[in-house]
Structure formats: C-alpha cells, structure tokens
Length: 335
Image (cartoon, rainbow, N blue to C red; front, top):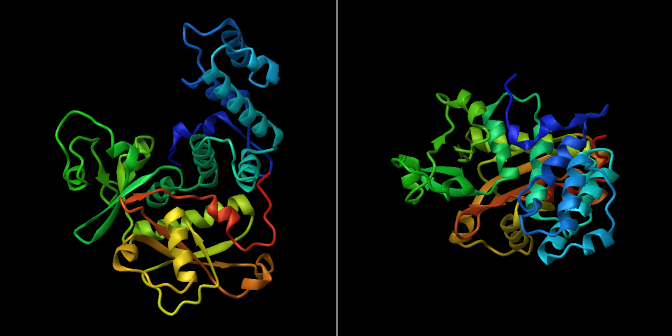
C-alpha cells in the first residue's frame, strides 16, 4: 500500500479502537513549533518560558493570567487562540469528535487554516486503505482551494496556492493555459502518470480533470461517501450527474458558499443566467442506504449536492456543509 499526505501529520497520531485518531504529544508539539508561536529574539521572558514549557509538556495547563503576562499583544492573541484549540482537542476522545464539535458550534474563533488541517488528517485516516490516485487527488478539494479553468472542453482544477507561487524555469503548457506567468510545474492526472501521484502527493502539483462523467467527477463522489461514512457513521451513495432535468429540489447542500447561493436561487424558483450556470463545477445526487437515518420530511427523496466556483474561478469547498447540512436523524462520531 502506497503512503501519501505525510504533511497531514497522520503518522504522529494514534488510532483508537473505533478507528478514530487519538491526539499525541508529538502531534501537539507540531502546533507549538509553528512560526506564529516561536518567540522572536526580542520576546519577553514570560513568552519564551511558556513556549519552552509547552514543547517539553504540550498538555501543560495554561491559565489566562499566564497569557496576560506576555508583553506583546499579537503574541497574547496567538497564544489565547492556540491554547483554546489545544484544550478543545484534548477534551475529545478523537480528532474526528473534536472536529465535529467545532463544526456544530460554528467553529468560532478557530482559524480556517486549523480547520483545514483537521480535515486533511481526518481524510488521511478515512482514506487509509485507498490506492486510487483520482480519489486521493479529488480529496484535496476538501482542504485546499483550487483554480478552475476550461481547456479544450475539459474542466481542470489546479491547486491555487501552487499556481499562485513562483518558481524559476520554463513554463509548462498547463501553467501557461491557466494564465500564470510563473508558477510551479503542473501535470494533469492521467493514466500514464497516475502512479507518480504518491511521491508527489505533498507537492499538490497535479491538476484534476473535473469534467462531468470523467474520473475526477466520479472520484469526488467517492470521497464524499467516505467523508460522511467516516464522520457520521451514515452510509450513503453519491451519484455524479452530467445534467439535471425536472428535479424536485426537496433538499440540497451547497458544497461551498457559491454552491449554496446557487441552490438558494433554484429553491426559490429563480432561473440561472448563463454566467451563473457556467460556474457550476459539479452536481451530485445523494441517497441514504438506511431510510431510518433520514429526517421524515425528505424520506425517499434524494439530496442534491452543488459545487460551484467564485466569479474569478476559485473553488473553495466547505466539507463542513456535509456535516451540518444533511437531513440525518443521528450522527455518531468515530471513536
């Protein structure tokens, strides 16, 4: 079995009896080693002492008075946020349970970066037995923004952070097509290079073809099924759609903010103009394997999932919408 996503930190976590990830001291120390928390040379003694103590004992209690004694205001803010996040992780049996609690509470005060990091490592756990590069590349949409472009009839998703970077050397045809003057070299995931994904998985330098009906489109459906099954313990089937006609929109979930806006328009009976329709990147129909898990109001009706780009062709998926937006009666976290 090929390894992948070493940058998720999954190798620093333990796995509980129920399959969930258990926080370790080594995992916590990675957060305390972040540049935002490493005291600069001019930092006060209190901040330096606190940082050293937490690197030695990352579960050490920290009270408000200790943080208030730090002289730098920005450092106080960073430490307040970090200790709150750490304490939240430690209050829950698994990383998955901690994530669910954050999302259901609205994730207030938690940086999006931290939320994406949790999604990254949770998906690494959920996909641990997966050896399909298309599924793994599609899963990157859950925690990394993508830039979308249409090229020769194909809908391509490339990592936004990678293509926004700058590297020396010649420009690949794909990078040139994306309109980036200088960027990292990017290849489209295909049959002839699929096995290279594993050695490149932490570089995020492979684009995904999301064209309706193709591998990437179907692969994202498989990731959605895994995500819901792993976190909510609810078995679903997700069908990738190439078009929707005369559908009864009893329930829908926007897979991102733009998808939610488009779903709202359709829910209210409004027609989509050509520009809005063109921003729909993918459509799915979700059904539940166990009718008892579904709220009575939608029992027997499918749930439609809508993924769309911003006007400047950026795709920022919000996997938390699948947690709070589905009409499920119960949702037990992985333990």
